[in-house]
Length: 407
Image (cartoon, rainbow, N blue to C red; front, side, top):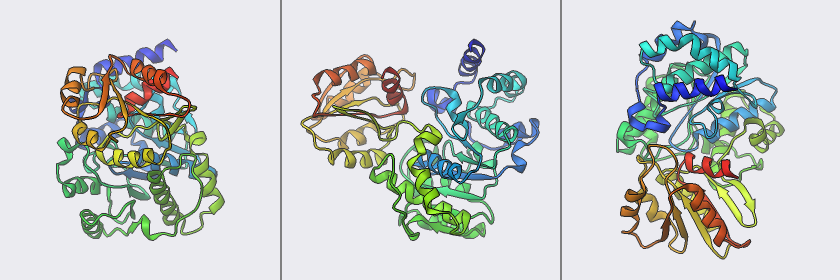
């Protein structure tokens, strides 16, 4: 649909999203989104929500919660970001993406307003999602926080449950460079008299959440305190086990132990089918084994490298591309020295440039080459890999998206 493509391109040109421009597109604060939602009739007022924040795993957790709720026969809205291939991935009802015509009509009807009021791309996307969920008469919406929590546009909702997966060092430019500062921002989604679930215990941050929950008269739960469920995962890794445990705890809190185990098991197993989740330890090929994962910060790479080390192969080849606000020096220190590394820059303006990449990499002792495009780097990996070898693709959503698109 040409009109849809031109509409999205117009949005990208007029109001570039954070995933393209980074900090220049970040607009913290709730007044603009409150006014925008009021302008379109406050569609959020009668909807039920689950709000999911945290540093890592909030996307996977949101998709899993949506999948389990779908298996319990609920009509579920899902709002996540960023997208990998198409803007419409951000807004889904059950397994279906928002209709192209709805996107076109929403932008046409409201563009004078959000241009005049200088709404961010994320605020526009979120408002569109909330209106769409109301039109579709969903039973419940799962909303993933964009960045931080306290000042994130999604924080205007009043949920049934707030979920904070974990805390790590990401977006420190905006959230602070101390773990407690970041936790304070994430804790901003804790609402008065709304239960909050913490996915991972941490001695440095637990106190922050406990104190905020106490101030808000909110019951606080920790996923580790719930009995685990042995449901299999279609994306079985240690870090996804943590997310699964969080989802299981969320279901227990929401449904007061009435959630049928079989429904939970089906929801976890069918998460890809029910939500089209991509790029989370995704198997691209078996021979050679190719795994793509959107891990892009230090904590996420620690988890990924643990999984990589479990894989038996003759060679381990990594195709990596990063964006500028990620701690690439810290990530490189985590990489196995025996690996073979092919670096490039994904096709966005926020990507690390090739010269900058080389200036960092030449100070390391890893075996690396730099390529002009991600596609060239991936093709080189394919050329040198035997059927018994292993290829990992990651570093950012954009790197993974380019490889998955070409394959």
